[in-house]
Image (cartoon, rainbow over all chains, first blue to last red):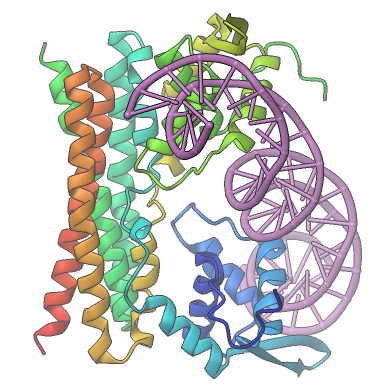
Length: 186
Length: 186
DNA sequence: CCGCTCATGTAACTGGTTACATGATTTA
DNA sequence: TAAATCATGTAACCAGTTACATGAGCGG
């Protein structure tokens, strides 16, 4: 294969996300990146050191990140930045056309369960929906806090992103409520 | 450890989904289950034979599924059904309280990209959003077809599930459109 | 008889998860 | 000074992905 010569090298969403985080936070440590993931209210990527550290090593080896060692007192540490190639890769990732599947319906654990709600005796179905609705209602507050935070900090696009998350949580909540009303009224 | 004695044995969403599919389709072959995943408009689980077959072997070994060989002519095949233990496990999976993270914001590739939209020169940002909006609009039609299908077939809960998917896609679409209008008008 | 779908099976890979161990620095 | 946080590192595991190989039955 040896496709070394400037190939576009399609990379995973996780890799691009890490690249993007470094772009925003640079210069930053790998630890800071793991914190960003850990503090996020999204449960999708658990991303501890075990995934981020080797991943960033890969990105550095590929020339998308660069790092220089820093010594504060006796403490060793490494500050990462994005290279110009990394920035170009990040832009290419965003540029149209996007893969069709990025718009496809996403994974939703509540929806996954909805498919099989018929296996529960009728009396218990509402309990499931009520439980889901309550938990979604709580998530609305969690997401709103993120929006407020990023708006205060002036990070417009992160605020935009969480505004989308909020709309989606609200849509899921409305959906669950409507289903409950539908199956209750008979 | 040796926690063999009737432990609840929390299993993954993928395993429970497979269990649920068998519950709906039983008796069915493993191939039929892989088809169900392949035909689904959700991109989350690619689930070819490589994942489904060993997974169903696991579920059978755990006593949640059972199978009997069938010979049509010279062709060997195996029909799977859910056991009563499997049905109980499926119900327990649905019963409250649900894990908090099931209501948490889900993975959305478009949202993931939104965080880093600032890396694109201003002129190109709208192009990204327009592309996303167009692809989401197409997905609405895809999901609507699923709703129609499951309504026609009389599978109420699958129709409910896709109704949720539709609401979410519409919410994402509206979100993307609003962002585009926001950044266009300056 | 060609090509498609049905149906089984598995071997190699890889990347994310879990789970640690280590030590410096800050804070209560 | 004890506890929490910052920061590094890695080793084992395993589940999902990819990519095949095999062959029966069926429709045109």
